[in-house]
Structures are given as C-alpha cells and as structure tokens.
Image 1 (tube, rainbow, N blue to C red):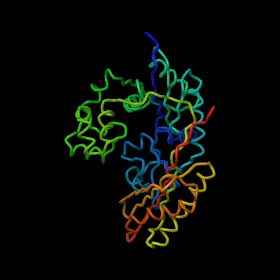
Image 2: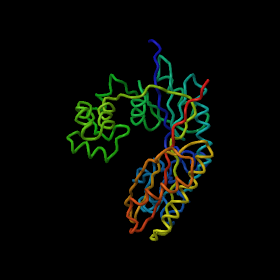
Image 3: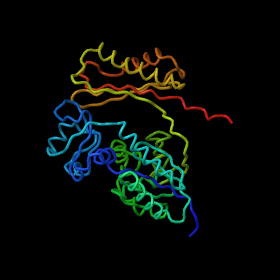
Image 4: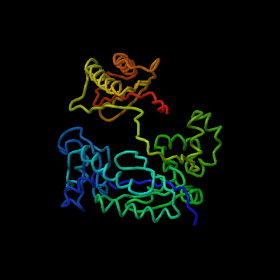
Length: 349
C-alpha cells in the first residue's frame, strides 16, 4: 500500500477529569466534577468538565455546580487547576512529537497530526499506547483525508478508540445525520437551516450555494454545503499557535443592577486586555461585550474599531460603545469583554 499523507485528530478523553483522577487514583470509576472552587454550595459556579461516570447522570460542561450536585449527589467535586492541566497537556504533546508526524496543537486536549504513512490505523494505535504509557491518559483518534473529516471521526472513536472518515465513506456515515453533527454548525444554525428545509447532512450537501448565500450571507451560505460534503483544510503546521483574540469574563456573586457599576467592570476588563495585548505588540481591531442577565439569558455584541489600535483608552471607549447596545435596566449576573487582534505578519527571511 503506498504511503499517503493522512491527518490524525488526537482528542484526550475527559481530559481535565482524567488529570484529576491521575493524581487521585482512588477516584477512578467514581463520578468526578471539576469546576470553579469545587464547592457546589457556592452560587454561580459552573462545571468545567465531568468524568464519564458523572456524565451518565446528565452532568454537562457549563451546568451550574448546584444543578450537577442535584443530578449526581454522590459526585466528587474538585476545584479547577489550570496549571496542572497545562503541564499534563505539555506531556502529551511532547509524546506526540516523538513520532514522525507534524503536531499542530489546538488546545490543552487536542491536536492535529500530519502523518505520511501507509497504515494510519496502526500509527494511531501506537500513539494511543505511547500516550497511555508515558502519561497515564487515554485518547481517541480520528483519521481523515482532511482536518474536518479527522475531527468528525474522533466523535465516533470515543472513548479511547480509532475511527476513519474519508471521501469514500463520508456520505454513507454522515448523510442521514442532522446538520448539527457537523463541525461548526450548532443548534441555532441547525434550526435556521431546518426552517429552510435542510435537516440532514445529505440535504445540506445537495443544497444550492447561491440560494443559501442569499439567505445566510455570501460566506456562511457557501460554506454550509462544503462542510456538509466534508470539504476541509489539509494543512497541518507545527508553528506555534498565535491567538486571534483574548477575553475576560466574570460571574458575580450578586447581580449587578447599577449602570455605573456595570460600566466600571467592563472598562476594567477592557483595560486589562488592552495592556496585555499591547505589551505583546498586538493591535486591537474589534471589541466584543458579553452580558448574561438573570436568570440566564445571554447576549453578545461586537463592533469594529475605526482603525487597528494600540491605545488602551480607545479600547475602553469602544467597550463602552458596545455596552450601549444592551438593556442595562435588567439585573446582570455575568460580564465579559473580548478583543480581536490584527493578524501578525509572517516573519521576513
């Protein structure tokens, strides 16, 4: 069989929970929930991740810890420890780099591998074995002829399995599935597509791109049929990941009801973000503000700056301009600010 350039998507199973179980082996097999301070009696703490045992009780990421405790009262609740997860992630990525592959890190718990091989399944099994042996963590691996198919395949591989999706079997596997089974299409978009008469991947793949562009805009409308056909990027790079945005958000122990206080919190976040990115030599091009009202309704608005800026005061001002788009007569439980950054120019030789 000739050597072919394959893409493998490595996704660590229940990563955060697995790291906690690794350093507390007595928790293996028990429902474990990680998030916030780890105290489900405190208000407004949310689940960062849950072990498979906890998920079987309906515990999910983003759920309030109090709700998780009601669904699974016997769960072990632990505080989030990002430095431990960063260190464990580095162990895994270093292990992946011992193989003859290109490793493109996508976060703590996932990476794409560019792999010239005549047997991608054997390579995937060898990687799984090495990751478990060196780190004690298990991973699922999707094999594909592009990133989209490889990442989609990982969903069929979980937990700790290997699955392959290519042009040859994409439609037979995915065609009858709902459109929100596609990477990048969520529930909200799926509902809009359903209103347009498109409910399955096969229906979306066969849709008229021009009609979709008229309904959903030129970029998204033409992208939807492509993703439904499994068309995706094939480039894998080992270049360090450069963030395109940075954000801050906070959930408050009591609702904010004063407009002045809300503005002060937003300005403070915008100032911190601006100083960080400016210190890194980056320029801000867009500012977004997120507001979550009580009980749980969330809105986000974003505006483009008149020109890329390195002026912290200007970033603060634009955050306030965006904040004017919200109804601040309602109690606010969460605020967030995100700054989107101008892409870095590639280094000249």
